[in-house]
Amino acid sequence: MKIKEFLPGISISILISLIAWYLGNLFPIIGGPVIGLFIGLLLASLLINQKRFIIGMQFTSKKVLQYAVVLLGFGLNLFQVFNVGLTSLPIILTTIATALITAYVIHKLFKLDSEIVTLVGVGSSICGGSAIAATAPVIKAKDESIATAISVIFFFNILAALLFPHLGSWLGLSNQGFAIFAGTAVNDTSSVTATASSWDSLHGTSILEQATIVKLTRTLAIIPITLGLSIWQSKKDNTKERFSLTKAIPNFILWFLLASLITTVAMSMGVPAAIFAPLKDLSKFMIIMAMTAIGYQTNLKKLITKGGSALLVGGLCWLLISIVSLLMQKLLGFW
Image (cartoon, rainbow, N blue to C red; front, side, top):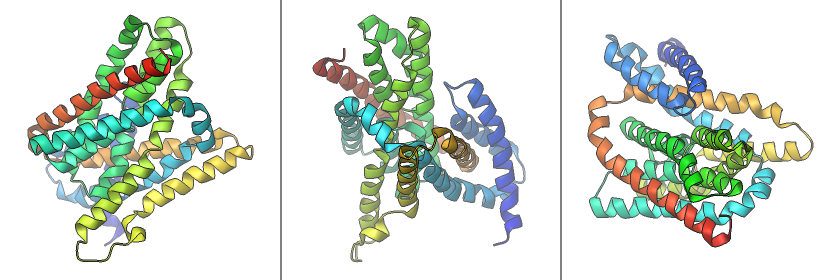
């Protein structure tokens, strides 16, 4: 296939992503990926010659998404995450388990779409859009399922950023307690930042870095969960073939792990974190590109019809994660 066939779709996704990136920085509570997704949806309904862009959009939504996940690894210094996040690890593990078990039980009880339940469950438990980006290629999720999951995560991120700082004040959480609460109960990194910043504004404190590191500790769960899903998907797809772990694990997950190790070793040798900042920014931009392409290829009618069940899963996961996070803090003495 010729490069010129890819260029129209890739070019327009870059252009839209630049706009979404700018708007996402202005409105971090919403974020660039969500803005890109909805611009893509709108564009698909307005353009007449859609086929001209579809090949490039398909490449962007699949391959560029995987490249973005690899670059995401350069934002993880494993030593720093372990050192600072260790105290919150029991809460992180408990909330992740809560979300995944809740999603599984709802799926079994109501016979909901397994793709949407998996994406919403993983997005709620780990790190929102980044976790969905890592999981979607592994389970071969359809664009409609990805768009629905991202939309649901966005909705509950907005609620968290608006309500949690006031809820924390009403409950009398300490600064450390709220940092852990924000880092474990808010889905997406940008929304954790917005929620922690709101607390700092209300109380004149500085918990942003601590909340972010708690959130980064959660991000590490991408590795075991995507590996587990890879093995499950491989067995599902090749029931008559002998199972192979090397074939089951996607290459981009291994590259993600390698990027994390490179960052960790380099920073332990004195390399400043700022060196990796451009790669982290590029990863975020590529996720926006992928979400734009996914929005462009999404059937709006299907998105709306699937939205109710996804909201049910996302709402229950969000509610139970919040409750469990607070209960674990009470139990461990952070509150």
